[in-house]
Image 1 (spheres, rainbow, N blue to C red):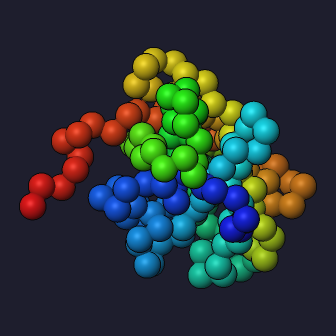
Image 2: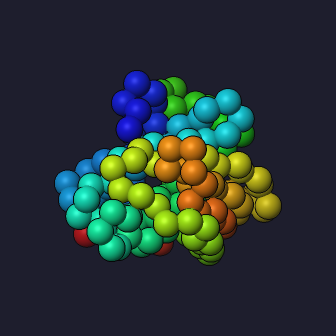
Image 3: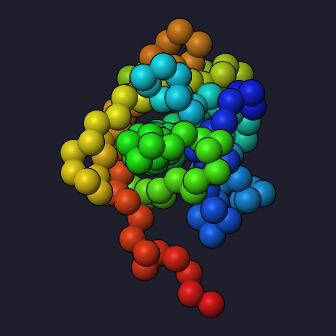
Length: 160
């Protein structure tokens, strides 16, 4: 993981920071962190061995979760930038939910190897963004995915 960069998830307001995949306030979660790397987005993750499919390989559900949260985080980065802001600006970023998720598993993903998700973002509607993601274990491309991320409706906020 990279803690030396400002990730979009670091900026989510507390009401929206509970996602199991990327929520910084979910103590049991993965804490995926997505940031810009040039014109692409990136998330680094070192999976714990408890996410085993078969000994020596990462569980595919974790890979899907990485692609999912990387996609929504990437969309948030892109819309935040379009609105004139960057992480660290003090302005709360938009929050996205998953409209669709597609994952292709290309090769078994080995354990004990840092994973890198690299995303490309495309606006397809003012409230929808498409993010294509490649997941690498070292230099090996293990999975590809696509997320259509939708600006989170205000009705998703829990009412007390």
